[in-house]
Length: 621
Image (cartoon, rainbow, N blue to C red; front, top):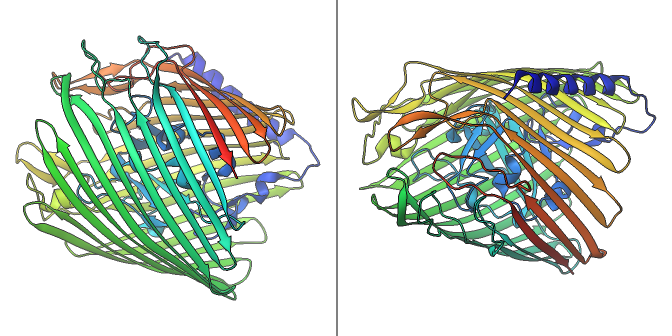
């Protein structure tokens, strides 16, 4: 990767910001009307937010049909998901701002979801079906004050679809495509995605039923001479009902089940193997909102159970469950002061030789101040009370200053926030190397940045972040036990984003991320990463886009020799085309991945996808 290329990227980005500041347009700024929620739990206009929140709405989800959740998130600044470009069903590594998967929190409808039986207590993104998602917000940085454990580098907040406005409505989506490597370009159909949804509203009653099936075949997990095929399948079922008792009170009840099965190979010897991993997730929950002037009481509760089986040289059965209750009161004193007072309680349980658990009870508070002269302040604190290690305090201070004009705004951003990560049940009480004396990992993040909008045409941002990880939990081979590290991990980087409406029909979306991590081997984290998309809307019926992604050099571990190697940078080109055949009824689309059939290594020794084409359709009634 040459310095000239990245210097050119920086010049283009700076020029875009300058152009945004100089451009005059009488159109009302659309981005001023954009509302974000995750960084405050209040629906606030983006101009008052002290973060560069990534919002993925229903329109963007519609234009990414056929892609997985991991593929979509991987295109966003600050995010790297290794395995998302490989065989469908491969283990995913989620890295945000140079952190690890355990430092990223996943929320579904406002409630934390994670697998207590896994060593790092992460949520497996392979279990999430895109057909059930209404919108996504990604807020980066330390946000434990609002969301608790694991919210150290990013929060991925997923909102699922609710009932439809009519008495009955439905949608059927089907996609078929190739699933092949760069060397094997036979274009046999090896990927199938089918899902159906029926939903509606009957006076005060809403309902929704979702059925989904994903299957892939055609790729081997590892690159081996035999290249035997390792298939993946997922079945997803979800039922949701809601009732509005009055304008002030409504309740929603939901439940889902996901069954996943994937075959894989022996990664230590790097040979084909008849290994298989199966997982079943069962989840039930309820949410309620009671509105009063001028505030709301939110009640969110969910119970999730995980059952997994690993059939390999080291077989095992894993069972875990978690119960999460989150109650908070949001109160708006006037148009300037917004407050949150909440209590979060959770119980995580896993079965090893015996059943073990821990409980967390966290009171928290957050205050947002929006001044009439441009100053905005978002600050909060949370007291973590843990049944094993005691208490831990985290807090955040997030000021911003907005300079508005008739065409847009310039916003200056700063933030200092701390976060915590609870040791997992495996680390505390597991059957190998457990240490009940572990303390929580302590993280802190500093951010400074700028966001500029002008007319309805340009929004751009540039942000610097600096993170420090202390007391992180690692496995000490000398003592054969998990320990809190004495050293610290330091990570810093730059995130740049731009959304530019070049003409009424042509739009450019691009982002650049620079990440540097010091203190350990920092495997699979690229130092440089670029994503861009050029989209053209021919009409209300016809849409096309061309996307480009560059992933820079990164380190990986060769598990046959346990040495580190450098993986070369690579670029991928893709395209998407959609056509409405029957308005509000039938749409077809064509998606192309790695159109130039580039040969590259995403994860050392594992298969990566070459040129692949998929054809899909969505039928609504």
